[in-house]
Length: 100
DNA sequence: AAAATGACGGTGT
DNA sequence: TACACCGCCATTT
Image (cartoon, rainbow, N blue to C red; front, side, top):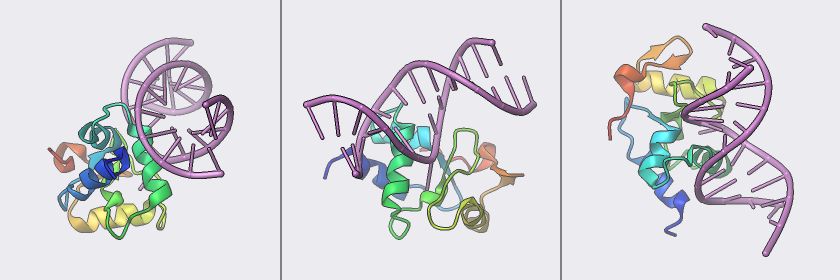
């Protein structure tokens, strides 16, 4: 499928370890700069956690959201374990934002 | 085919 | 700075 969801999943799969991307960034790379919502929806419905590191996708301000596997706590834990810098409850985008 | 939903984002109050 | 509302896009029912 060449659907937007396939592209989105592909983009997320390209996020390097120790880095994170915002929904808006992923959506933009997928081909629709305003499809941040669509991206999040796809993650929640598909939960391709085995193939897609959705835990590396955070909000525009670095705030962790959702994560259908075990909540934001697991997401936060995984990111931190990968070397992502955290600023309290949110990711330090200044140092851990994925620069495509 | 149409309406509703959702892990967002930006702006306004 | 915090809360609320509207707008955007794609998927699902």
